[in-house]
View 1: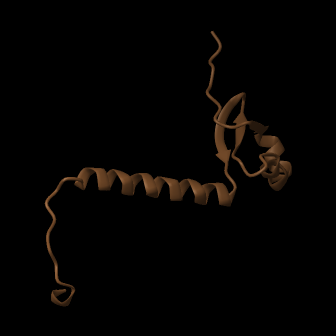
View 2: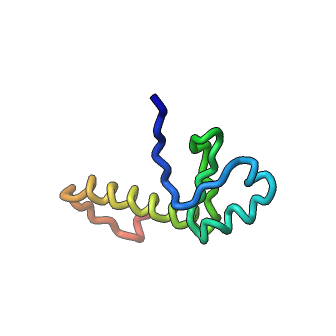
Length: 84
């Protein structure tokens, strides 16, 4: 039975194509990740810097939101800024 693989990109390219012209492969994604295939399996994703930065910002926002939900309902502690 042939194995199937979930590919999380609209554009795919082979490793040999990537070796020939890496920037052309990245540009094919038009700002989105490109799945790099090796023997018909996704090996990794080439992610443009702007997309990676946006992903990291979103991840940080999700982590902060989880922290807020975790602390919701905890008693407040009054603090005087001059005491710090």
